[in-house]
Image 1 (cartoon, rainbow, N blue to C red):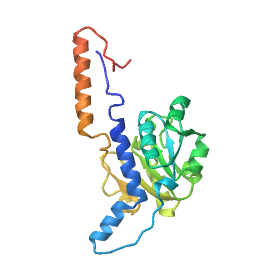
Image 2: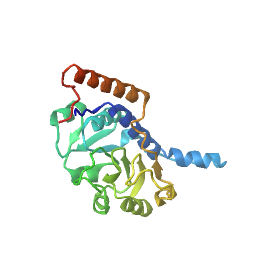
Image 3: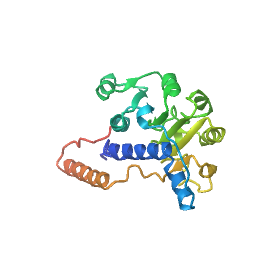
Image 4: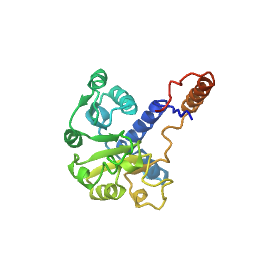
Length: 224
């Protein structure tokens, strides 16, 4: 049985959702919308993205796409990757740094690692104790990367300024999760990869793979 995938097709879509969540968190968009709908007219002062450092945990295809977009906002972009690609980082203007340096220097931490035994709860009580106070956490990768109990405690204590995620430890997420009681928590229902273009390109890539197999060829996206 030939097994194929649609590697990298969703990278841009996920990167767009990452930027949307980042902006929503930093600019407090959901919180201020809810307030305005209640007839309030709250004042808020923001830090502009150009004055912030984005720390990428993982610099693969999605992380690289996020870096390009963040650079368009004039952000400083730093990254930690367990298998660093120095040439890619240099081409993007991204500084590759040790994990401790990324945790301590980032105003926004964006997660882009696979879910493995080694990366489970990558963000936990210990790592949250080492981040820059007031950091924003963004996760569009995998829910298992974040210990949600530790994340909740960091939100409540003010250790982090906000969290914006598209993925959860258990999905569908329980709407009664205490995370949703926190005004500085933003959660979307694992939709980062959902775009018309992704669906179209995945369909075409899969169709090409099927035709290649029928023709006795090896699909370019074959696994193994």
